[in-house]
Length: 416
Image (cartoon, rainbow, N blue to C red; front, side, top):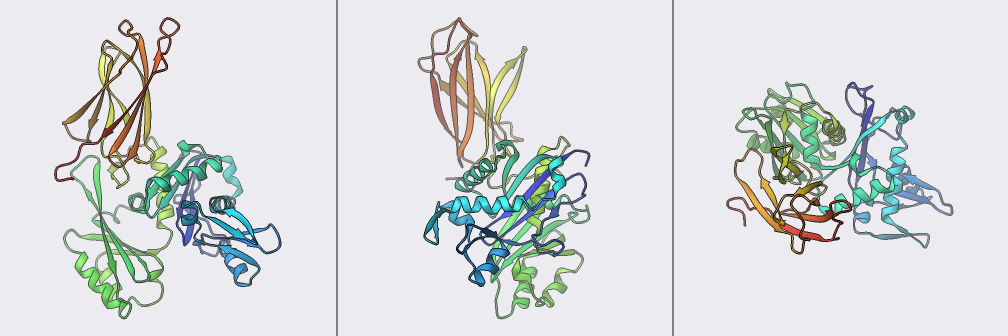
């Protein structure tokens, strides 16, 4: 791979957590197991405190100790931490966030010793879905573990699937790629499609939530495959989740394997997160484009004059995670006490203009008012712009003025 960076991928949810790393010594991500050589990658997301002593166990060790009544178990750490729950162990209160932090720190300690010689490229968390509270909590965890914000990224599992697929052999994605995720009687179906006529190739993922008949899983799954494998040819299928455990697929597996590759496993998302980190950090061109549900769909910036040439200064770029996106720049006003913010969708000629009046800006000669412009995505359809008057050296000191403006993003046709 030609660099000395290492990339972590953590697939985190209430039931199990998986942790992988990717470095220059391996062609593909390596998934960590708490039991060396066991191939057991799913680590229960729980922690246990040994009774009568301040000693902590994580994952399967905590589960086993709790069964023997040697430890008090706290499970579902992710959702508990998300709501700020406080748990009591032997009468003493513990913030669930601190317990999740302890659990994750234990995971990081599993990494081989040689990793200390490498530079961290990025640590990517893959979650079932993303919203503002989840991203905020991941950032708190990263801060507590002393990881710089620039090194941390949060994606959903769908985006992780996208990165995983396009790091496989080209025969895998010559057609559409399907994924079935099954837990109990609940099943999720994704169908990844790429448009080879665009540059970069635009990738979309169709999603359906399904259910499977517990009385005849094989026949029900066979019918699901028949209904959903229409249209463009599907060249590969991935089966994820404990619902596929056991030897129940006979009829359905026969249908799945007709003219396509089929893979089973549980660590796809954590590996995809590693690949995501490498792509995002690398300077190499990436020939695919995918906008997830959590990504900005629009570019936000300013039209500026740079050395006599007019250009677009991007504050927020389409494709950035809207829960993490923020950007800033400094500009010098020419004449008018106003600032123009431009919004433009990728590959669209039409742009939207928002004019922000800088009320009470000191009256100065042209090109003697320096401003810092900051943009941040706050909600799904809103951008906050904060403008600070920096003045212009000792001749024109800063007034201390700050202007805050919220922009509602334009609705697409048919949206309410």
